[in-house]
Length: 629
Image 1 (spheres, helix red, strand yellow):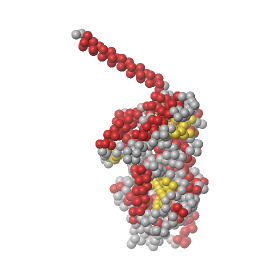
Image 2 (tube, one colour):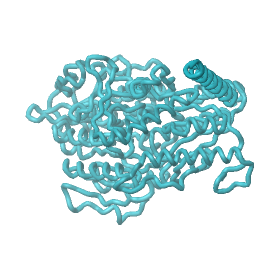
Image 3 (spheres, rainbow, N blue to C red):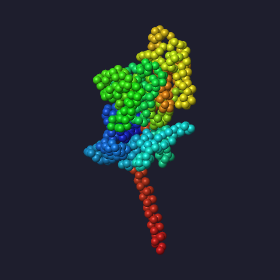
Image 4 (cartoon, one colour):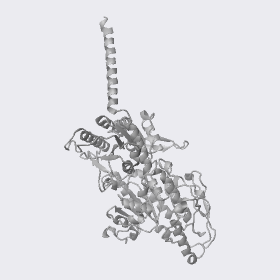
């Protein structure tokens, strides 16, 4: 293997607190797989691993996973949870059991559950740094810490805001009670000290690296190195026809034009922005009623019913759908457990009466689909489906954002907030140079009737235009676009008889989709200019997002093909093989450092010598004061 050719095989241990479904977990899994593919022996340790809420690679035998420290509860009491305290205790217990298992030869017992356990060359720790000093001293092994984001900023009531007059600069604000500050102070100081004990510190983006230096002043002279999370491109480009055979995929399969949002069900992910933007397509008369009702929005993500934030977020999103008069369904990855709720009709079918394989949200007229704990097959289908038009990535100041990479790998255009990590991975589209294809509009009706460019070519319903070369302004002047454009005017071509042209348009659209690979050469769009970009970076304003949605669903076939190629081409720099190469170099570097126990011995000698010197000076001072009298 590549790793064996470049260097000796290493034994690498990963320590992650909870192997659930999320961006940090996806990175850890991909990092472990990338090193394993390079010939290294990789073992993962965690204090929580729920087989019903995890990535498949951690349960199908691809990766070796050991659960330690799960005997401690996750919280003390609902009224006094002390979640972070118990998280620290679980991490320390995991580390202690790991150290004992490495020291004792066996047999295995409650105190050394993994004995006999072979020594590791390197440990890679992420999310929680409290175990780093104990792990280094107890095992004599070097530790690499990967900082997704300082925990003190996630749980301490901090806010991150951009400085408008300084590009890419942020400031930290804290709005919390003195009790919360008092509670968090020792925890935050512990995090800062233990993070600094790591031999090498990495971060997931330049944005996180800047925030890290602001959050930990004592470590600002040692900024983290940036290694971007990467993904397995081949896995994300897997044959969608194979995924469609999965029973879970049949539950969400539909030829409806679809928007998707992939995020955990947490308040900070701001998924409400996607729903509000979707509703504004109808409420702001950007689309006709029939056209809008043909669309759907699938919101998929990790959901843990034991977490209050997850439960509260899902409940608030359902309430929002009710308020916006949007039908919705709540589906789990293996079963449907919520009826379809409608604000407009009481005659909607009950999904509970259908089996999992038959529960197709399309048949229930649900425009919003909440998909909890999606499977790999479901993700593959959503990202590769010809009916998927765009991905909405709603978090602000996201630390990195793995989801935009997933979308780009599958050629799906993205709309995301113009802050945080996505600014380093998403190439902002030049809207003024992108050709779109719209039907005309009546001068009495501002509704725009779009024709979506799908393989199935299910033309959306809407009013026919009687005018040729209508001028349609789809984006009005807005400060949110930061002056990129003051409205985009597109001259639509004359629309001839549908009965005469439909077949030819269908054939042309199918050809455009099949010719994606041909776009790799020097293919130009119909207007003569290749699209350069992968999505929109815009402020979190539903009005602006709705117009961006309209813009993307109105792309001409060749422009959509070019945009798809641009996204796939850009995603190549985030392939998992690159992640493996970079992490391997870091592991080799840390392995070449001086023996840790020798270093600790040298430190103890220096410390003892300094204490002896201080003692001698003290004795001399005492003798001078009392011996001379």
